Image (cartoon, rainbow, N blue to C red; front, side, top):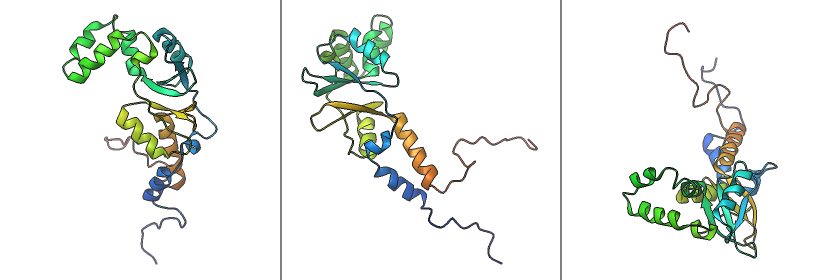
Length: 195
């Protein structure tokens, strides 16, 4: 009789292998057949137009700002756009948060901005060939919820966000990971006996 330990199924890689597979996945593969429409505005558009565009692009939390030729020149995170829209609605919230120099600088930018080019940050983007690891790093380092996807001519062709990265991770780990059903991270256990 062999030991009581359950042997892993043959041909099923470890969790490390699943992470490796995820790391090597391209942005194009991550999008699959379901993508989110990119929110694109011209740098000369006013911020009211930027807000309308973002509201029309459900799920998009980063505005891609393009020049007159359609080339990406910057991005506007939702947090900055929302801050500009609500500056006069809740000004006390801005005053409380202005302790650090970067907050003062950001407040000045928000209070003066009238056009997309005045509120935008430098362009942060990925291509279809970039890895999802690169996409995650760019989102994390730039505190963005999503990134525009550009072609070789810097024209916006799509959008990738954090939720799509979560879905990709789950897909790869369900397929390749060792965990069986019912072994999720957030399974709640009863602390009372007999329940």
